[in-house]
Amino acid sequence: MRNLAKLALFFSLSFAIIFLAATGIQYLSLRVEWARDLLREPETFLSVIISAARWALPLAMYASILLALSYAARKRYFAPVTVICVMVLSMCFNFGISFALYQWKPAPPAQTGFKLLGENGLILSNALNGNETSVVLLKGTAEPLGPRVMAIPDRPLFFQESAANTSVKLPLIPFGNDSPPFVKSLSSDIVLSGEQLQKRFSEGYQPYLIYAGALVFMLSSLGFAIKFSVWPLANLFIGALAFRGILAIEAFLNTSEMQDIFDEFLKNIMPSSMAVPLLFFGFGLLVHTYSFLVFVSRRRDDDGD
Picture 1 (cartoon, helix red, strand yellow):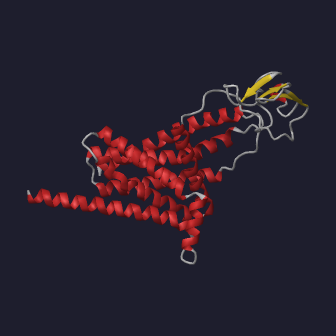
Picture 2: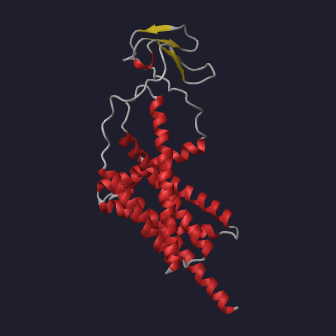
Picture 3: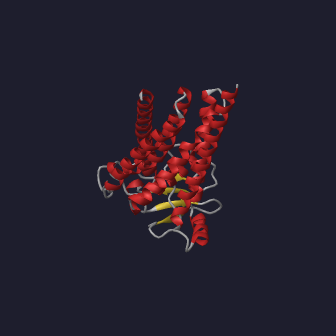
C-alpha cells in the first residue's frame, strides 16, 4: 500500500510540474509568435493560456506516464498494480484538465493594451541571404497594410499605396532563428494530439473516454521498453524513443487521409472514429499479453532452478 501511495504521489507531482512548465513555455512561445505577425490581432491573456494548456496536456500525459513507469521499474513495483494506478491517475488528470479547458471559452481579441514594434521605415525580410522579398513599411507597424516599398529579387523597387489586396505576405519580425526540424516535428505532433483530445471531448464524454482510455492503455503497456537493460538512464531514453514513436503514429492515424481509408474499410461495420481507439487497444493488449507471458516464463525458470 505504501508503494502505491509513493507511485501515486510521484505521478501526480510529475504530471503537475510538466504540465505547468510546458504551459508556461508554450505561453511565451505563443506570445512571441503573435508579436512576430503584424497582421494578427492581439489576444487576451486567457485565450493564450488556454491554447498553451491544450498544447501542454498531451505532453504532460506522455511524459508523466513514461516517468512513472520508469520509477516503478527501478523500485521493482508489481507491474499490474503499476499499470492500473498509472491508468487511473492519468485518466483523472486528463479528464479534469480537458473539462476545464472546454468550459473556459477563449475571450475575444484585445483591441488595446499592446505596444507597437518598430518605427516608420521598418524593414522586414523573409531571410538574411538576400534571395527573399523585403518590405519597407513607411508608416511602421501602426499601419502594416499601409504604404510600403517592395524589394523582390531580380526586380526593381516599387511603391504600394495600400497592401490590402496584395498577394505578397508580410514577412514575420525576425526575433530569432527557427527551431531545429526535430523540435518542430515534435511540437506539431503534440499540437495534433491535443486537438484530437479536445475534439473527442467536444463530441461527448463517451468518445473522449474511449479514445483517451485506449491511448493511456497503450502507453502503459510500454513498460517492457523501460526494462530493456540494466541501466536505468538507458532504459529511460529507450522508453522516450518508444513514446515518441507512439506520438508520431497517433498523429499519422488521425490524418484526413487515414480517416478516409478507415471510412472506406469500416463503412456499415462501425463508425470510423472507433478505428484509432481499437488500434490503440489492440496494440496495448498484445504488449500486455506479451509482458505477462514473459513474466510467467521467468517465474517458472526461477522455480525450476
